[in-house]
Length: 107
Image (cartoon, rainbow, N blue to C red; front, side):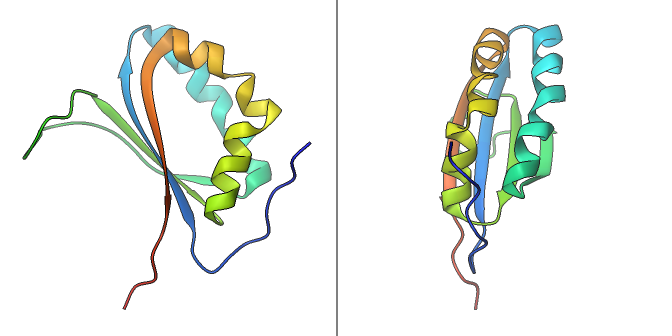
């Protein structure tokens, strides 16, 4: 079993772009995700609905941003048995694109 990584200087972020297909299943998935985040020291920063595309093409309607202690924790969470168990529910509920980012130092 993979264990959470120790904090690093720069947090990692997961950004999810979502188009919901089955709202009831999506709500069930969303209710279960926070318990998978806690062991990794992660928290939801933003969850919102698209109001406009100002440039380019972006078909998804929802976005979520989750902050992790570091980029390795993003991968560890995603690969964890707790999160992997939710993937069938997620995939039945929505079309989801997940992206992992390592933040860059500011200044």
